[in-house]
Image (cartoon, rainbow, N blue to C red; front, side, top):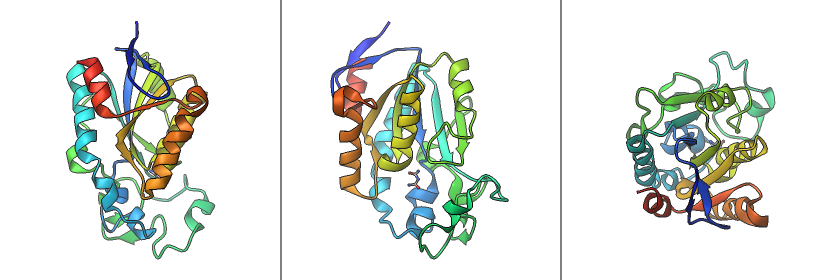
Amino acid sequence: MTFPVPARPYPFPFAPGRTALVVIDMQRDFIEKGGFGDSLGNDVTRLEAIIPTTAKLIDLFRRKKWPVVHTREAHLPDLSDCPPSKISRGDAPLKIGEKGAMGRLLVRGEPGNQIVDPLKPIAGETVIDKPGKGMFWNTDIQSILDNKGVTHLVFAGVTTEVCVQTSMREANDRGYECLLIEDATESYFPEFKRMAIEMIVAQGGIVGWATPFAELEAAVT
Ligand code: C5J
């Protein structure tokens, strides 16, 4: 059974009981000063603006007892899961694995690698440490979703055109129906966010659907 959620490019077929929320990389490394995003020269304050809407979205899934998955972009302390090309790319003053204001950048267990307090996972929710931009590469997410009978994914998180879009494209290729919540995702570059959403919904939803949180909330309550 599905019911329609108003969305672009046409209503999203929401499947209660078979839909998981995926919150991508809402970790301090990307959202707070002194983290990885900051070290790359980005204005990180743009990203914290979506925390309240993302919190409402998570709360909606919790109230409905639908699955919530959190991801973190995170590497093993010895960086054995991080390609050298990913470390050397760019001219940032601090590289992945080096010590910043919140510990080693993008390394599991470090303070900067934790999800921001207002969106902290609770018991029973899945937390995936992903070494890539996409959530399927080198993770257990596929079997976790299969075990829960999930066929539909609602996406939130950062950044829209990097880890969110990559994960959504990976999910789309694996047969999941994917809906992006437009005001629960953000980019350091407003134009990239806008264009990423346009790319997702173009050509009849070639990657998936997009809608504001209020449309989903109204449709499911
Ligand atoms: C980036 C991400 N932008 N979570 N990671 O490097 O989008």
